[in-house]
Length: 181
Image (cartoon, rainbow, N blue to C red; front, top):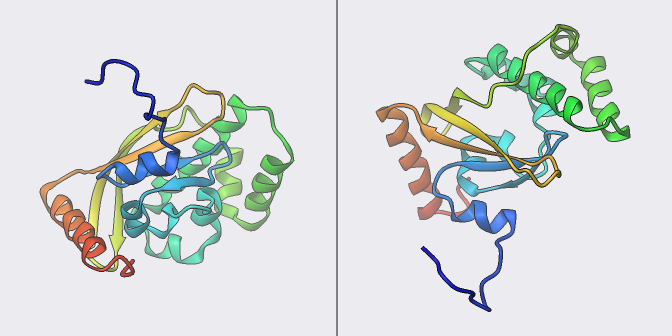
């Protein structure tokens, strides 16, 4: 526990904070843009690299639907998160552009967007097929900041022993060769 006022102490940026966490971790904004991510998250999935929009990645990348083990579950989760964001923030031009693009280019998104849904899941288990270490089942938790910026922190942890071993192997690959992923 830290007590007292250290003049040299400063708050960490999102990037510095996330890099310090040993689990895969990202921060996404109200548009579902990944604004911060640690290297391990990016190694788990290309969706979790800074600059990626989770909606576009899920619905407009043809490889995702074909290769994701639980694509329909993940697609519903992403659509619900985008809908929830709209309910929490006033719509603006950027939001309209993203939703318009997804509706126009993805029948799956259009169907999910038109269907009534409840609150988005803030925790659960996702399945990732990673080309370097194989299939991993990772539990995730969403943590929302109360600063009004609309940022959500998403953290993963292995859901079983085999996934834990594979995640450790992936972490080891990053440590052994930082350019590997």
